Image (cartoon, rainbow, N blue to C red; front, top):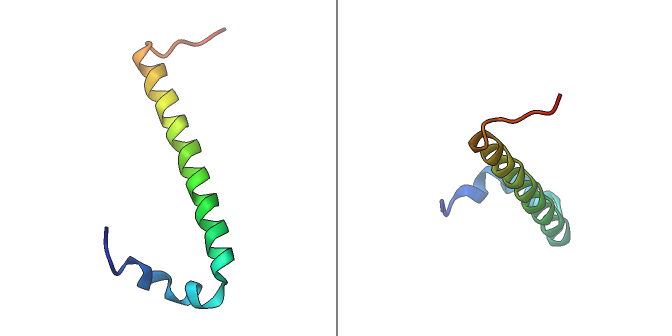
Length: 54
């Protein structure tokens, strides 16, 4: 982890509350989880030979 990564968003951290940051963090984590599920489903589908219903 880059210990200075926060500096790119320093203005955002100043402009919004801790509660807002926490909500945004939770929303981002949910998006990541959804996208990881989607990527896992794609990998599984590809491994199954890319089946499609017609």
